Image (cartoon, rainbow, N blue to C red; front, side, top):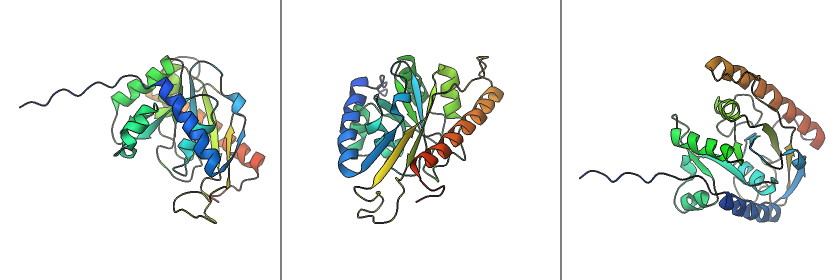
Amino acid sequence: MSRPPERAEGPPSERGADVGRRIGVGLMYGLWRPRVLGAWRVPATGPAILAVNHSHNVDGPMVMGVAPRPVHFLIKKEAFVGPLDPFLTGIGQLKVDRHTTDRTAITRALGVLDGGGVLGIFPEGTRGEGDFASLRAGLAYFAVRSGAPIVPVAVLGSSERRGRLIKGLPPLRSRVDVVFGDPFEAGDGSGRRTRRALDEATERIQKQLTAHLENARRLTGRPATLE
């Protein structure tokens, strides 16, 4: 017997993302002490891409909670397990397979931007040093394809190791800094989407994100290495 066709996924819920933001606000401010700088730099309307450094699992929920607008994050499919699957989908987050060209995720992410929403991306692709040292091409593609501005976001302090009460989480009630930077355009104005154009855009993006991270560390007094 042939398998029934899979139900096509519709666009992520904007209302759900707003609910997720409200949940995030309560959790992040209840468990830690976020200090948010530059949130006014996020465009009040229209499409935007938040490019977030990633050194800890709490980075996404933290940005989701403190951002001034609802955010639809691209999240690895491995996180959508058990009850987290309907929950993350319900709050407007996007499942992506990092090991292949996930055309469904690409289409849904572009749909967020085409609809004037905010897309959240970890341009490093996975958790690491959180220093934007190695970027995947996905961020450049979404920015050039949609024309949406990129807002760099630095999350600092989420990797704090001293005084942890719960394994894998920053110390409860510790300060986590979230610094939003000035939005910028990734493309060169030509509208080209060739591989070379995307490679050049990725280089421009990396310079901007690295500069923002360095500035965020100066502003917050954070060290240049993991805490």
